Image 1 (cartoon, rainbow, N blue to C red):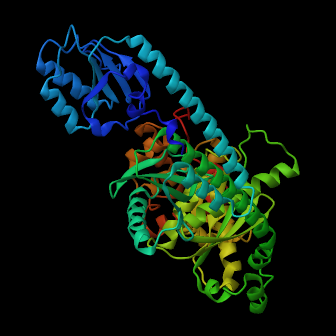
Image 2: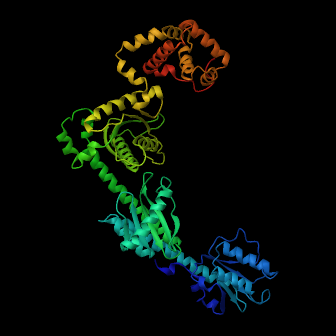
Image 3: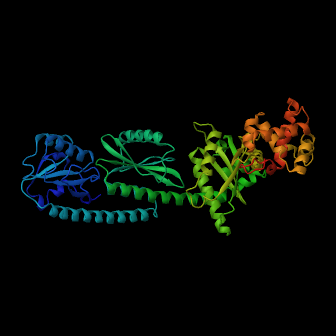
Length: 563
């Protein structure tokens, strides 16, 4: 960085208007930056100071008594003013020693003019310099930002961007990829790398899951220096961090350059991921053959997966089937290219999210369904917990323009090992997805299906129908003839262990209406319908009916339902 871009008190003292000025306290703070100049004659300044201002005064507001003067100076120090300039004369003939001591303790420059000066001339002179410096800063920032962008289009663009960032800010830069080796610019010997890496590890554990790629830089103290940390990423995912170790207090210029470098690197990483995803997308066409049982030769699997087949084949995995739906009120461009772009973008986001949760996805697409074999690379948390977190993150992406209108319904199979068992996992995911109308859960694991696992195998067109008629026939006929809701009432009543209070609340009916319905059910099914054997059979029959006709056992959503 060109240090002349920051206008300091030391430079201001070299201006002709400060020829007779004298520093009487806080001389160690002369390198403090000046952002603006204020003339203040009142002690009521609560809303007037924003930080880094040079304060000019004749002392009229400080001449009353010493405690008021000390309070005024302490407030300026607290608000991070740059310095205080006092014109000695009518209102203050000398600066009390107590003020000088306070200024020295805080390295807060205290400057006096021994003769009358025109404050308006000082403000005009310094403001013109400050504005010119700011314009120069913006110009240099734009020039370096353009260079960042140009460098990302060359070989090893990220390395070149970080080297330029280090030179421009005159700082030590550490680039930490979440999956990769740390890089130092300029290079550091191993003994100096270790403390910085430990510092980052502590920071990452503290901030894990909090930092988004568009978050503002964080500031931390490290070995008497200030470290500025900026996440790098896109698609709501953080892929790396840039750490800038500043021997000086970071200036606006430093932080703006760090933001620009972070954005340029994120764009390069995103381009690289797009290219990798397109390659993987075409290579993973064999995944469709695998899940449909058309690959049973282990040698062919080895050739498709590559040298790490032995490791991959022993990993636990689950098959996820993701159905992509679009809300009826959202209009998409119906062209094939638009659909391909959306599904490809979804697979890119999915891969990024899964990798964050230590899952390696093998992805294939058919029509509006993505099939994912989620290989568990293993971590501290159980595999199912991490997969559930990854799928919830995918479901809740709303900041991405391409995906915010998508509705995803997901079925997940049981945990398996050995890729030859993938067809079984796929069928389990298909079955879980098929029960979305019954459960109304956007993500359903096969283990959560309960009795529906059994009902799925019995759905041959007759078995379930006969079973349903045996135990629920009178209620079905009554509902069809009278337009009543006895089946739904019985389901809700049994699902809540016979609690009349909860059942009435869930059905949005008064208790008396529920009593009438239960009496009618007893009349139709018999007094013993709540005996253990009958109750189990009736509940299974209700689940079977819900499986075959999910829309007929849907709970009401408001009190507008007739009683």
